[in-house]
Amino acid sequence: MPPTRPRLALFQPVIPQNVGACIRLSACFGVELHVIEPVGFRFDDSAMKRAALDYGPLGHMIRHADWDAFQRDREPGRLVLFTTRGATPLDAFAFQPDDVLLFGSETAGAPEAVHAAAVARVVIPLMPDARSLNLSVSAGIGLFEALRQTGGLASAS
Image (cartoon, rainbow, N blue to C red):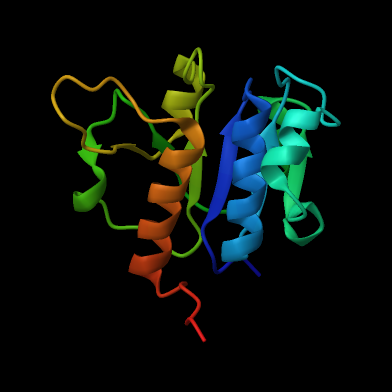
């Protein structure tokens, strides 16, 4: 049975605090987080642990040795690449419940092979002079919009 909630995927992240913040997103919104290695830190890095706080056990992180392993092992669903080279603004994109929201490396973005594998490239609209957002901020914005569109937001109680 395919997933019914969007998932996050990080392509070769290099900043442990971003992965820690995405672990928190995973835990707070109940979504899988896929980390595609190699990464630019050790997973026992204290900066990542500080960013994730005590959310690690609540998160749903799956590590993949490389891009090929991720492609081979992941559940079905569209790959939606968030990129500053995106073609579709976030507010004009229609998400599906089983989408994989893919974010490139903080320093190098995503290579052409990753761009080619994505069925859509989405850009978060920014002010004209702004270059880009932080990876975990972008992931939070994209995930919230995907969950909002697909009815996946938990009700606050």
